[in-house]
Amino acid sequence: MKKSVSTSVLVASGLMLIGCGDEGPVVPEVTTPMEASVHQRAGGPAQIEGRTGPGALYGLYLPAEWNGDLALYAHGYTDPAAPVALPGKVDLRDALLALGYGVAWSSYSENGYAVKDGVIRTRQLRGLFASKFGMPKRTYLMGHSLGGIITLMSAEKNPGLYAGALPMCSLVGGGALELDYIYHVRALFDYSFPGVIPGSVLDVPEGLTFEAVAPAVIGAILADPAAAQELAGVDQIELPYTNFNQLIESILFPLFFNIVGTEDFFDRTHRVFVDNSMTVYTGSLDDAALNAGVERYAAAPNARDYLERWYQPKGNLKIPVLTLHTTMDPVVPLFHESAYASIVDAAGRSDLLVQRVVDRYGHCTFTADEQISAFLDLVNWAESGVAPAP
Image (cartoon, rainbow, N blue to C red; front, side, top):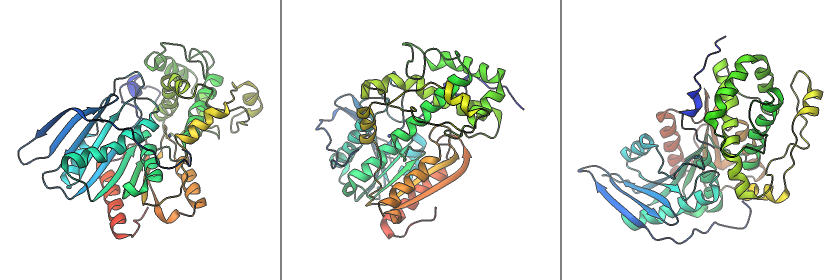
């Protein structure tokens, strides 16, 4: 069994993550475009990149031969400490432009779990694009990870604005389901490898970085791989892996979001936002010892209300939604797809949901062809009324 792995496996990989009530459509803030720059390559696409208040960057892109439709892209999770920046999905953007679609995206005004701001900024893009290039015939939504739940919330809340939605590798089962998974992994890791990570599940020391923690975590796993395998097999998380390197990655990914994102969530909810107080962990070698020894924490009701609002999907679809997920996603597990299928079924709208699964390890590890094929199938569905195959 191979036991060596670079400590930069995740640190250098540019991780993305990945999450309302029934109060009605989200109304965007009124902003004025500022500092816009226009570029036009001879015979190529036009692009306008600028800034809207407060602090959001935007990019609008028009192909040389526009088919009249627009694709809005919502980006995934970004470290709260990083500066806001436009998405880096240039290959995806250029592929859509080559097919004749206009493209628009935003940095949002903030990083971290920016679901609310992401929905507002993404909706603004449609008006910005129309003001510069003309109103599109149809507007489609798409996004990876956290951008996928922004995509889904936008589709559920404001279906009249959009023709279809493509959430990819996303927490479509809801923010609470995703955060419980991440914090289960941290609690189980601390039980299996006590003292390796400073602080505790909800007490991440100020200034602690993932880069500082990753080597110690990897070292602990290498020293006791059996404990890591037992941790991964606990029923409440069931970490995906087919080899030892994947096992290490599947443990590191949730720990990354625990370390980087905990303060951000406290800033948003002002309360404990996850709960394992009643969880009965199963699937270990000694469940009684595990349940007696694992750290417990209880969520404040209003903190869970935040996750309900931003965002617990309702499933009352009015436009086509096609989801795309890998079978072995260590960041946003595949169980999100079955959870959302149940939500949509309960709402009686399964006819407007197609779920496509790619048999592969990794988070958002789709090929360009898989993503473009899914997008074009969504477009054909919206135009023809005939749902594509899963």
